[in-house]
Image (cartoon, rainbow, N blue to C red; front, side):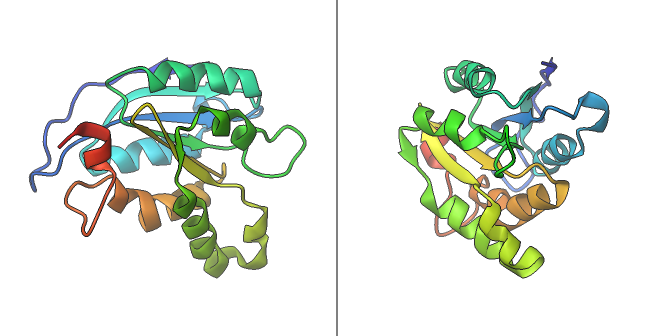
Length: 179
């Protein structure tokens, strides 16, 4: 498992509250050199003024996933976790099973909205997405498919706005930070 930490980028010019974001890639086949989905999510978050405070890559194993997430859920510097991979129906895909028991509250609208957006892009194949979201110890966790295209859909269509304190009528920033 590779892990990195980065420094604060400060407050955005528009006054939005920067969040501490962690990115977890779940994969048995990807490494740091070819983690295009994790790279996309980290860069997209940075581009919006957020800080990448943790980043890791773990195999598709329920207990390995839970171990990483459990550490991040209790870390006050982590406001949101973006998980890519392991949400399909292939043999070892186990992200929803690993993550769901950690939730205090489920964000049903994340998976629903992700699949609605994906329908226009990939048609009925979107039914095979088990994208989920939830809150655990005031940390938002969003799990999406491992393809970079799916991560782009989730970021541009949902996460970019919901992690932006200026987005109205509501966003998750106040729940995550008390701002």
